[in-house]
Image (cartoon, rainbow, N blue to C red; front, side, top):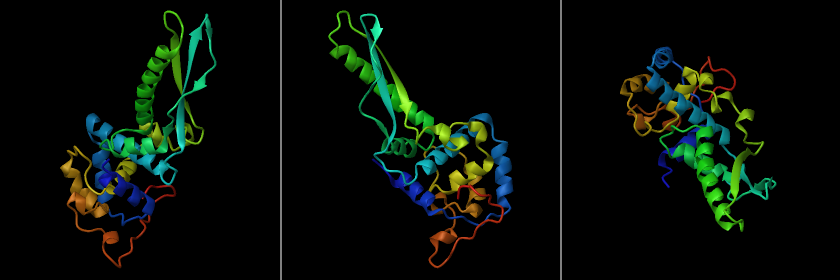
Length: 225
């Protein structure tokens, strides 16, 4: 699996560095806010993806994010819900978020896993149960309480919670434009905010030995780097 872009993104997020926040940010905010619907949706997903990557930062890869439970009907009665294998793990979620052009959200990655595993488990159970005429099987997904998106930042699930600054933060931590990037007009505005050489920008202060990043005065507590 290719971690060239994904691994670099995790490293930058883990650094927690901030950069100078010049007036160029205002123009970039305006352009993002005025983007046509298709572009706005794309940028919003990038920001939601970045929020999910940051939320999972530092968590054990084998941790259970959620699980599948299934039951079947026999003799007119439903059995109790039973846990199934495999479980959804942090490792799977990270792979999904980092290897798909950074355009899938936390819930979308869960849904992808759920639909694939649900169909596989239903088929397996229907083929293995000794019930004449087959069995009616149904499955459901159950979040681990530690990874339930309702306990995380609003940007995990709510596109309306994503602000232009969230989009900017998600873009400048990427080591290069994401696959399929089609907004070259934004690059000159991202460079002064700290986008790296992979964007075609001059080296950032953090890329130059001996230089220390400065903290923008208008950063609010909880802002992403």
